[in-house]
Length: 255
Image (cartoon, rainbow, N blue to C red):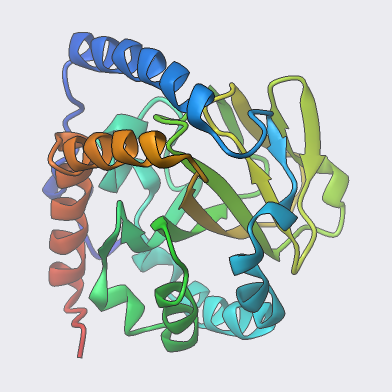
């Protein structure tokens, strides 16, 4: 079934490649600053125990999964990643990688939060939450190698729907490879090169979060400045605009 929102109606033109390359180089230099001021290891994978604030959400993961099941009943109405964020067009193809967003760089997506009240309540209680969404990966899809934008945040995945052949649905970060387990967190530094293979016949879904990296006082000041700039860039404003338009065309409201 075709999506109710015509792809041509979404502001999907990617930004100039030169601007992207320059921006990425600047962010890599800035990452050296966050390396020096990080209060946790700067390693590809991180112990979830470094983030005790995640325990409450983990304890209620089955309730989050129940809300996910309701959302997946309307899967054709969920946008592909690149339909919201044109910057992802290299790694997101067709309808293979869908995202149901709750937060985009701390901006709350009220229309989506209203559809998942338990999940939204748990997310509202998380300190330092920047991004949050259901990340829905189709069977047989490969997300090619790429890097995240900044060490100012740490990426955390909560396994919600994991293929039975879990080892064949895997995440490589730098030289290490792991797979998801339902009801457990997988935390990593996404500025290391990483990729995902779902070599199974089942869909994989995680609750995808970006949390503030624990930094010292100077690092926190630097992050505040960087995120202030990022939130005002097309990297954030364009996806928010596309998401607002997507929900408007579907008639989705916050109340």
